[in-house]
Amino acid sequence: MEILIFSVVALMAVVGSVLVITSRSPVNSALSLIATMVSLAILFLLLNAPFLATIQIIVYAGAIMVLFLFVVMLLNLSKDEFGPERRRAQRFFAILFSFLLLIGITTVLSVGTFGSKSVESSSDTVVPAGVEPLARLLFTKYLFPFELASVLLLVAIVGAIVMAKRRL
Amino acid sequence: MVSSSAYLMLSAVIFVIGVLGVLVRRNILVMFMSIELMLNAVNLAFVALSRQLGNLDGQVVVFLVMAVAAAEAAVGLAIIICIFRRKKSVNVDDFNLMKW
Image 1 (tube, rainbow over the protein chains, first blue to last red):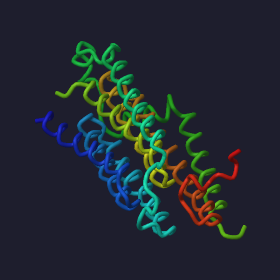
Image 2 (image 1 turned 30 degrees about the horizontal axis):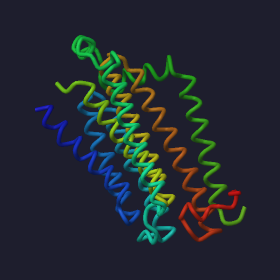
Image 3 (image 1 turned 45 degrees about the horizontal axis):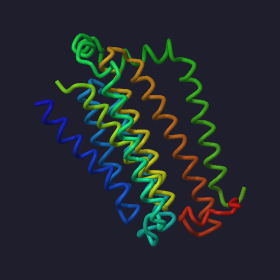
Image 4 (image 1 turned 90 degrees about the vertical axis):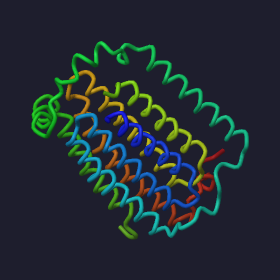
């Protein structure tokens, strides 16, 4: 059952990401990216991370992608007047090196020990799910990165407003 | 039960599709969306490994990565709006002021 859900959702994610990079219109790319993010949220649920699944939908699909769509509409880009990269050589080498990168990553994944079955079958039931264990970790061990993230968000807000104003 | 290597393989595929998007497309907004795709692929890898190792640190990292991605998206889109106001174009081949 879980394998069936995983297969369907993984297929949805891959199809969505391919549509992101091949759509003629940026609006279609944004909508495909939202579909990919929703399927990734379902995968987070399968991986026993319900808080992250919720945050993914709320923050990524609900805020960041809405921001993208606002900008697409603000710049009035309904259609892509220029296609992908014109230079054939760059396109060919891009596809070739992406393929080599995929081969490289999958080789490392299959050779490395974290893909082995013995580690995963023993520790599958240990992960606590939910908000409280995550919050406990975030406020004790990762307090400093948490505070830094809040400062980063403040700086990003100020920066984005200053950059996007018409007259300072 | 689906093994972690399946999730990691899916993460690798989505990451490489994002890399391809950044290299092949010329529209700055689609390139930016491909960068977000790469960040999402890495998030999936982190959560899969966190489940496998029985450790919640991976999920905390995903939380922080999402915060950073939100900040980066806001600032990046503000920059794109600024550039568009000047050049009236979103084709990265037109952003060639610093090219030799």
